[in-house]
Length: 237
Length: 165
Ligand code: SF4
Ligand code: SF4
Ligand code: FES
Ligand code: FES
Image (cartoon, rainbow over all chains, first blue to last red; front, side):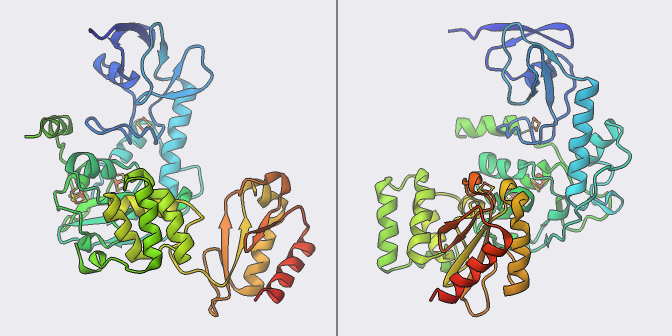
């Protein structure tokens, strides 16, 4: 059986995609930019950051492009005053929830959160900051997790569980008290599941996960080729 | 695996927990139900027991810990002899449970999640217990009191703790 091809419009342009593809996939294939944070090619979609929201004609609600499947005849808008307003608010809220002091951050200049803020023209945060007092776990011999810079995108959780197969990370508590946790709230260095592969460090969009010995602006995240890793893992080689 | 997670708890209570897991063929979807049994039999989620459960159900430790800390119902520390649950869901909050919380803090020096030094009282904060029509809701050892004002509620708590043994 062949997969049906569906046609739709994105920002007024007629495009087509395969049934089962998400709006985000089809948009990227056709050169449209939709900002994302929790989504990462090769990992399952969490649909949690809401940054990729788009408008769909005939629906008053906004829809996350990374988990919304295309439909025949859909009319998608990827950018508007309203979307821009929401996206800015999301980024500002992320900044206000933790302690993002870019000037002293290991990924200053190459942080996905910082880049998005710049692209969206955010120069100040209109929400009062929570400035929580969060721990930094440097117990691992090679890596550090600084919860003050975590945006809870769960990329680390998914790459470790889905690609490395270790599932060292998960999220503990809920709501504003949510936090990334290793094993049974175990210091990372004492984790019995971590293989030390470093994948979580490189998928982390912020300076929350980094290599030891890196100082301000020195930490560069490497693309890992996750779709490729996933494919070879699925083949079992 | 470190030694402490290999030490399987061996007593009656652990038998009950094993039975719960067996009823679900030791499948990972037995987790929540198993955690309920652990909470019932031990009164809290003992770390060694959690590790044994994770091991037996083949669920990553972090996942088990995530689930265990997501629900207010579960507690990771032994609870006091008595438990006072104060609902701080939206309905109960606007109807005055914020003041009750402040009063408990003043009176018993407890903030949510804490147990008094003499182990007599644990204070738990719940985000909506699903009885909003009765707001503001408190639960004294599981018994629900609702629709009462500040004076009455505080009197009920004092009376309950006075008589509770
Ligand atoms: S280093 Fe590898 S195994 Fe360890 S937590 Fe990160 S992704 Fe998981
Ligand atoms: S540590 Fe990094 S990758 Fe993990 S949830 Fe936080 S921001 Fe995302
Ligand atoms: S990228 Fe779609 S919700 Fe995060
Ligand atoms: S808010 Fe208290 S029961 Fe719903």
